[in-house]
Image (cartoon, rainbow, N blue to C red; front, side, top):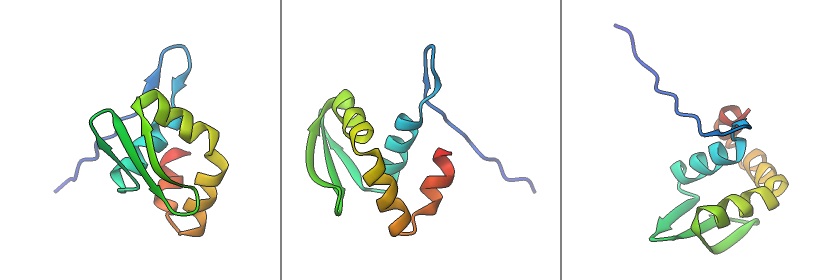
Length: 86
C-alpha cells in the first residue's frame, strides 16, 4: 500500500517559492500563530506575544524577526519546521 504526500508551496509571481509564506503556514499549523478575523495572534515565547493585523502585517512581522524565529525553532528543537522551509 502506497501512502501519498501532498505538498503545497506558496508561489510569489516573479520570485518563486516564498520562504516567508511557507514559514507562516508552518507556524500557523504548529499553533504558534492563530487567526481571528483579520487579526493574527502570535504566541512565540521570547520572540513576540501579541497581535498583528492582516496577512501583510504577519508577513512583515516574520520578515522583520526572521533571525529570532529561526533561533526559537532551533532552541526548541522544532527542526521539522526548519526542514520544511529549506
